[in-house]
Image (spheres, one colour):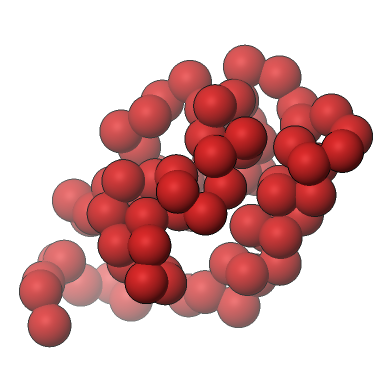
Length: 80
């Protein structure tokens, strides 16, 4: 609930903003939470525009593929 989607290390060894910088640049809500992003209709719904071709689209596709199997538990965030 409080974990920031782009800025915290929650899914891999690096924050998503470092792994997908071109996609992060499209984001309007830079401090969106993981729960907030997953409750949106799509990952791109809070972008200033849909990712275009090239590296932008490639990074967006990789992001979507990497997060396709993520399910969020219905519990409060905690550090492990």
